[in-house]
Length: 255
Length: 153
Image (cartoon, rainbow over all chains, first blue to last red; front, side, top):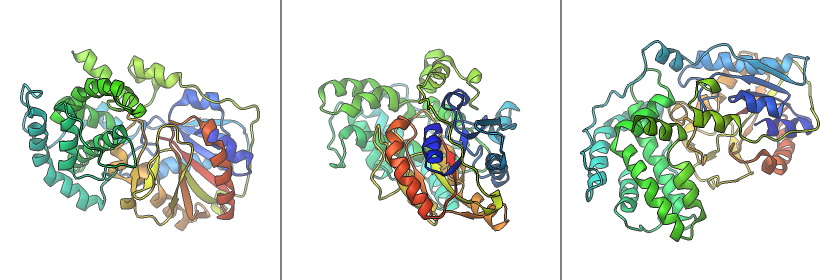
């Protein structure tokens, strides 16, 4: 981000920016930056909180009226509301009762049956979220949620499914299918009002759902597949882009 | 929150040690009061129109987001899995605050909002974005923009 600021200022355009990782901004030294103590992925701090978002915007735009740079790096003084709620013991929990995953998910067809059962419980909430928000962020894969389940579970069953999009590699298609699967779950789980953090959502998805456990099972399968497939993206996807580093650490700590 | 001291060790080291470009110069452009500025948003969230080509690993190019693009037409094709997407799923404004900027323009706090905004993918080495960024600067000036709000994820 700081690099872009340098290029644009060098071209004669004033810039101001949000900083999410302060040491990176200290190293890159863009002209004006406001560090915020928010989660990665939420530069304005809180979804569905216009007053808080405007407060952040006013703070970052106010740097444009200062004349004591370069370099200006200020700190925003407030935590995002969801984090404050979590620290007060009022954190988010998924309000939807899903069927507990069977003990032996890896048995023939176990993941597919369990994920389909979860989708059955989530669909009403996904539809509610869709109506409330007027949008879904699914769509990168071009598949329905049931086609996505079939596609991902084929890998888990040791099959090599057809690539649903010949304009991209099989690994890229799998990446988009996984992103759409996660979006479906999170959009459904977040349908009810109230603040939540990404960390809470991830802990639920990777810790409590069969779909999350399926991605852990997928990891070694596609890592091995990448060794034989002519798909350079597949190995990177398996090891860096499938499961968040924070969730891998959490799973290791709890094992 | 992203106070590095609050993160678990693997993530703390990873984020704290990501190589950053260093620059020999410190350009600084001043301008009119905020209430007269025309503002464009530059996001590194890999936002794109549903019909756009997705961002791939190492992509240094950008996608154009018209200011009147409905939120339902935008998706996120960022390759990284190490940041939250649930905020974006609930409210586009948490990554692309166009509604908030228009409210500020209507209230006279800023001059106006640009006709076009731009999205890169933040996990790419910024050096790979330089040519595209300098080209984009010309497009921004043609739109009358005199200030860019840069938003990472």
